[in-house]
Length: 99
Image 1 (cartoon, rainbow, N blue to C red):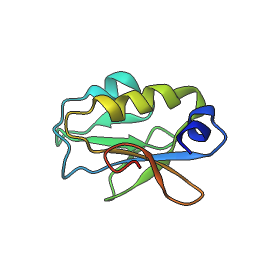
Image 2 (cartoon, rainbow, N blue to C red):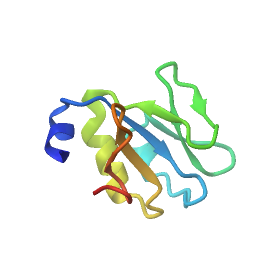
Image 3 (cartoon, one colour):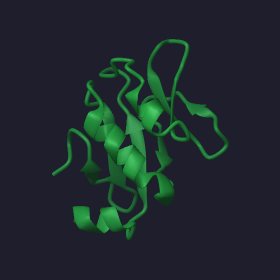
């Protein structure tokens, strides 16, 4: 299944568990179009209008051109708080809870 996600065959979304966020900002360095640190020092996802989504568990679509950057963010995050899941069935494909 991960191969399908990697080819872009499935729509993906990403969310951050702020309870685990360490505020290192690695995600914002990899994909500033998707992630941003807020004044509280924690990372949040942004929607297509560049607005921070601060509700707990808020998710945003992963733009296909940024998929590699978002996946690298999830892999490199020291807090292991970035979750990438399929929109169709909410199964995590990248991140700490991935199969």
